[in-house]
Image 1 (cartoon, rainbow, N blue to C red):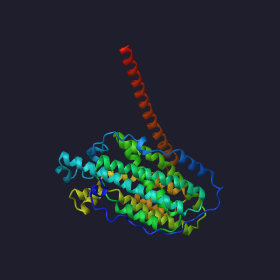
Image 2: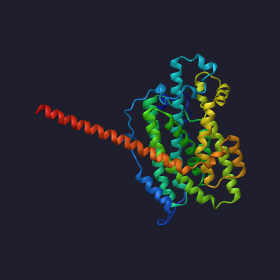
Image 3: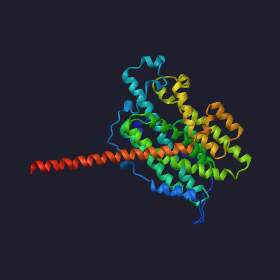
Image 4: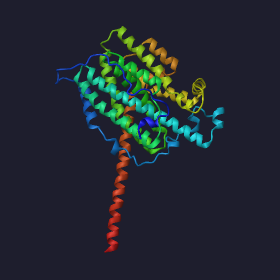
Length: 369
């Protein structure tokens, strides 16, 4: 079924066209690269995988309880609107929330694919071009997987959130080659990683857990790439140039924070936008969720050398400054380990099935003899 038929709201004109800015850069130096980045490129090649075979698409999903989200986590819980909802209405609300979340993941992954391709084009160093080429393939795979989940398991898609679209447009329109790194690798991907992780660690539903775990294994490399490239480059910039990047981060973080309310879902349930925004802001769960979502962004921004007073004050205002001391390396190592553990469990289950089949065949042969 065409995606157009599954949208909960009008997605607007397609294709969405963002004017390209900046130069395409070629490097004629083919035998000089940073060992760390070339090692990451090798890892990117080694870790390629096929979403059709690594993920068990036979697993069933109840679209009305796709993630096992507790009632308390929904913005309407405890309000006068919640009291009016039937059990069927609540299931439909869960379906819309899960579809909204995974739709934003899908649109973000397409944005990441375009930004990674832009980095291949614009970054001056060949080692970075090499790695970005592997990331472009990763992001294509992620978009394919989220699209399949929404089409086959949910039957509902939401358009891209206005704030996500705004940040994506700002990132792609900027002519400076480092901005796709900063906008996508640090802000959009950092926020997505935290969102993926929170759902991965709380859902009891096998298919979404599997999808998020494997996607996060790739994303751990992407964030490492962004940190590595920007940390090296930002050491060379003037204070004025660094402040410009910090202003971009401040604006982007506010956009990302405001992206998370899911107001579009409540509007589709007949709640006026202003009231939907107010209900979302009062949600204790959403406040906690929003704060934890910056657990990947704040330490990354600090690590790459953007930590001026205005930026720190913005993080104080958001209540997330203390997250600058989090260990990104530990978080990324955990992402890798969880994917490897899931693989090991799947392989062990397949081996048990094969052994059982062989034993059954032997037993059957013995009985016939």
